[in-house]
Image (cartoon, rainbow, N blue to C red; front, side, top):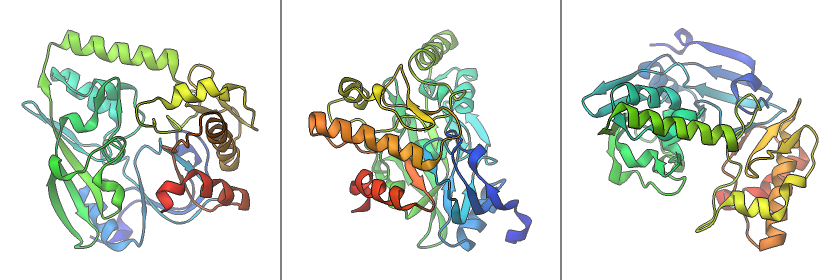
Length: 307
């Protein structure tokens, strides 16, 4: 297979692919349709940024002079008994509905997630007492060092709070297998409905562009609680605001730029630090060129990940 056979967009405005609706022009964005195309790109394209639902990122308004691989077309999912096999681009709500239709419990928490299986495994996503690692059995990975496909069992994935082996940069998830449990459909549906109702009442829907939780929870505490008590809902920045029902969310209220978003995140971070001497760690990744101000902010916000 040759790369020229794979769908690619050059000088592509990535703004509308992101759930934050913030971004700029990306040099090239590839859209592989299957694992074969994805692996060919990983072997050939130098230092690509791999993204799924673009739900946990801030893309620079100044763009990105590099290559992005979007896995959103890699959406095959199948059920074998109590096991679900999903490609990396399968979106969380599709995985949740597929499990429900097969009377399988364990994916209820993903019903309101905008992200994909790849992103959810990458960050060990979770909500409502469930995590992706709870049902995870095996990963199909691409190894950048050997340029080969390999399989890794759950005990080698280094799962932790919002952490997995994938964050080391050596591997990319192609697909994963999960072992769920049989349960009455009515019980599964009720749990999914409760999760959706919670998100509807507390968290902003994607009708209000956002990138999910801004900060990770510190050990034995809640970022949302700390932010709320510190008074961040009163903070102001151009084109963005802290969500009135949950202080760990920022919404794009107009034509926000990446700098607008970073300014708000930094104000939230600084307010909690000054109030509680706790330095919150961002859950959202920043990708692309940085203005001078963005460079300054990122040095403060991403100190732990830059070490």
